[in-house]
Image (cartoon, rainbow, N blue to C red; front, side):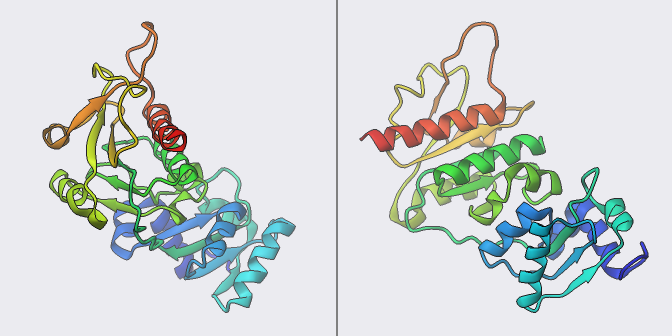
Length: 262
């Protein structure tokens, strides 16, 4: 049993939980909690190692048994130590270190969303969860957007990262991607509260890449320069705009609704 904070695996877990650069350099994430561990197993994610404590639930014990049956490295950790290193107030008794998921682009990539400098992990997680639920083809992140594999985003997204192609691109690469991906051209539309074209009236049945701007800075000029148009979400006069996650969810569902109804 691991009981020391100086154990090599414990040190690695703390680095991966706390340091984006270390996650990106090693392309390794921490999957914490029973539900996310189940999601990882469901898509046959490779596992570097699994740590668990005696406070784990029966459901969690079943996950550990599955991981052991696959011959992945598993070690018990004292419950107090796992609580100390956990990113949550109280650990569920299990965490995994695993490579970033490799989710390949589908043949039918449309629709695509771009998240431009979304900073809030809760917003990012909500958007990814919605995108996975309705079958968005890919999620493109501009530099400066929050890390989709951070612990807080992993929890908020409920494992959506295992089901979505997620790539970081600058505006030039996004433009190239939208012009030639899988033989189709995507129209780049900005979500803009000042746009005169309502999303209810816009043609979102056509191949589309929807850009959602960050909470404070909005959409960058580089993306505005490559856009084919913009759409707004009708709303009352008491507020100027929607929360980024709410706006993204409304627009993704409107894209889906138009396709279902045609």
